[in-house]
Image (cartoon, rainbow, N blue to C red):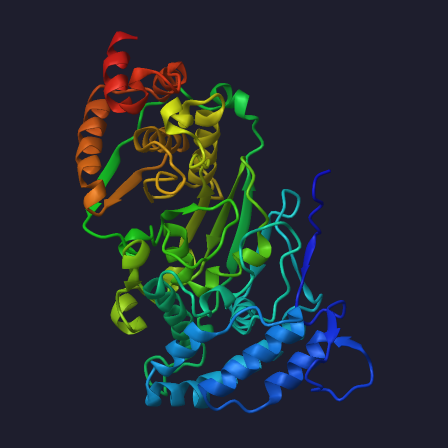
Length: 478
């Protein structure tokens, strides 16, 4: 029996969310009381330092979940590392604003719930203040679990515990959240700085489902078109700097997990979402992506720049002003993040061949990428799409096959790819890709012929691990 996902996600202010008043904050006689009543009382208590904040978070955790789910050790260390002046400014100027925004939830969300994205309800548009309210509650960890099976956390608890595997990355994500909070309060550039919320625009979350069956894909798209020009750029180290985000008129591919969201390490998705708190509510809106689905997020402003992968990931700049000052604030209104998940091959036995070439896999990936690349509305196309290796790290995808499929999909969608390779491990691949693209463009290769040649390959063929060379030889002969 398939799991039935409800139409809406209950928020902390929902009357249906009840729990025990374990700390007797309300001094009520009832056994079960609305969680919102307890939370309002807890937030009314004066918090002046990190110790008080940790106590509040622990109270919320135990009240909502019945037990402590994290020790808050890493967050406590982070708060103490802020320094006395920064900590004082946070609790004197920023914290009261966060409490105010958190308590606005019933008026910001009159239905006490969020619509969950689905094929039938494919877009949720929120004001920046609504998003800020959700992010504050993610920080407070006052949100219930998502009503669908997922490994994505609804809140930031996964960044708080002592046993963090990638402390530099998580510190960068928490820094992004605190930078965001500072800008909500207008305290990032001094006391006279306007709040981030003074520049209002909608933040749009859109689930795009391509209603084309995979087996029909080659017959429903213009496979006779030529491969379009593609730029290959090498970066010594990967980062989320603005020039790699596709702004203002393009888009950036986020190589996502099928359960989209933030995390504790430094995958590309975790870096992009972790540096952009306004995108974090995707975990509350987006059930597991299906083969024909991608997620589009528009209007989320980055707060920091994160660079590096894995344990080497870190905050590039310590302030919003230093890292993102070159981007006009309203440019972020047009920022587009395209979340697309690749097939997961990490459990396949590589000795048995290349799983990318198993039946249905190439068309699934081509369809997924085409869905993302053709997602701009209003009959327009993106000026460029910034992408890179997709599903080729932990997911175990083949670099050459995945790159060719992205190139074919972009050509079908009529957009130009800017393909980013980064780090020493991708330097040689960048050189090979440049040579391959120049050759294919010079010979005016057609998408359909490239697609057919890929379909002719079997997972255990000798050419399966050298697809660039195979295509160069086979295209001339076909």
